[in-house]
Length: 327
Ligand code: ASP
Figure 1: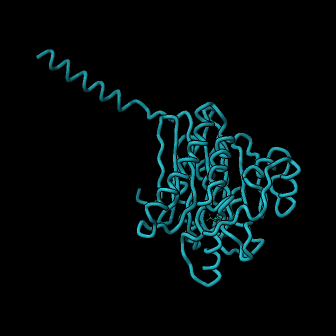
Figure 2 (figure 1 turned 135 degrees about the horizontal axis):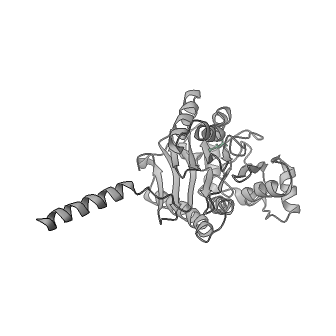
Figure 3 (figure 1 turned 120 degrees about the vertical axis):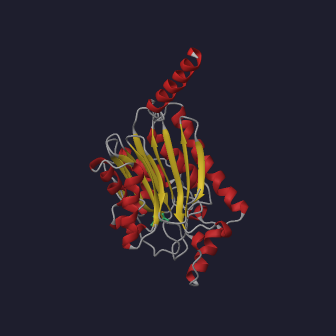
């Protein structure tokens, strides 16, 4: 009898101990996205589905390599975004959507949560990895944002890899442009903006976003992706955000900064802040999604759409990718 009571006590005590053990915050965390929008399983072939998941995994791998070896969040977000820029399936770098005139005009931004330094570029036409140009702006110019042909010149002078404008153009995006010019709208024609947010082992946050913008956009149009506070934001005291969606609405709702303000001032979790801010975007008439990593370790991969290409990796060994809202 004594043994039974002792056994029960031990089980109860260990259950209590388990309940009281706080869920450990991972040492490092990486979230990525590859665009949000109308994504239906019926419209996606198994091959396309697999190609997107493989691309997301490649980006997680690149960022994980940096973070798992004790590297910085800033290097991790740049590494993950570069992989997605090089993948022609995503709307950034090679494979970006085209302007009405058939050229790729690329936008990107990056932010360091340690001191809120930031760099952004818009309307880039020849820099192979626009996120590299954004980081160059952040680290060497004392400015935050450059736009137009001067960015290409500056990047070239700094030794950043330059490619001919045709490098970015793929048959898929040319067909998408033709469809748009003929007045037909196919949701998958425009998705694929990419982004990453990370927290490294020192607790530092960083965010990065890169895009070709909107299919068949008028030349010169710039969306939220290179706007610090709209498409990208990082501050160690609040959170790191990268957004994707109807850029005009994301600018008007100051999405990335608003999410971090809600985290810092209203003590919201990443998920609560993302939900409240995406509701504002929806009320204005906009759709899209965000990835959010809060200073307290809470995370969100949220959307007000049917899907968002997305992924997560952390130091506990977690590695997952998703496409549809219900997975
Ligand atoms: N936000 C991007 C833009 O408006 C597009 C997207 O994320 O799909 O340029």
